[in-house]
Image (cartoon, rainbow, N blue to C red; front, side, top):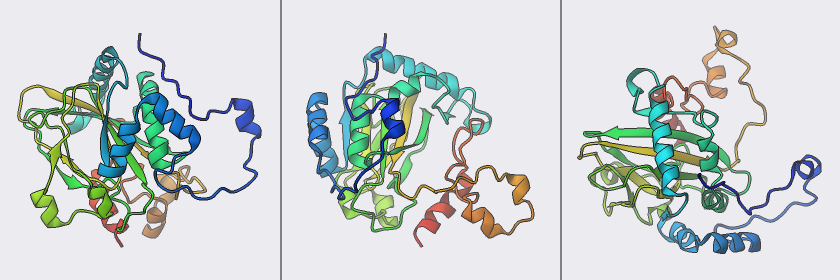
Length: 299
């Protein structure tokens, strides 16, 4: 039986949530200035070193997040759902995973994950992406980048995005694990073309299956090509701050409404960038808009 994912973080009951309202505005808490309650939680979960690693190196590796049998079940679930994807990504990717199997609720509610999410993205952080990838022998490397790719540089002092990769198989360089360049989060910018080509100081995040590799939105990272037989199954989990979330939701305005409308209307409704374009059938976002999104973000 998998452990039940519970957390001691602030969780008011439904009645309290319904009637509570902030009675005063608080001051901005600076990065890694943890509240007394969070310091106790970090101590209880034994993740103080992980928090230190995030502050100093921009990445960390969480251990003992769940028992081995949970990771085995997670891997099998990812492989099963990847077969439901259509087209070229069939068997290689599965997206929009929350709600498709109860195991993913358990994943995102794991106490160590929840603690790091709040520390790195603040209270009220949003689940941005939950997608699995299956990399076979010969899979190409992923070029160096920072995940806050839709933010212009210099990146904010407050981290905006947190990525967690649950390794369902052992992470090794030959197996195509994630690579990072430690401490590049302090540069608060995207890598340039020369840095992408040479990857100075890149190291592999080698760790056993069941580990969760975590990095902030500013750290430069990519992955290695897979040079050994078999498959590397990873669950990618991304959280973001609640900032800049639209006040109004216009998703009810469908393609029929937009037909013959001026193109700028499509742009302001987010229909011409890659954010929010993931579908179950496709298994990932609409990457035809990826470069455009990143370029727009840098203007």
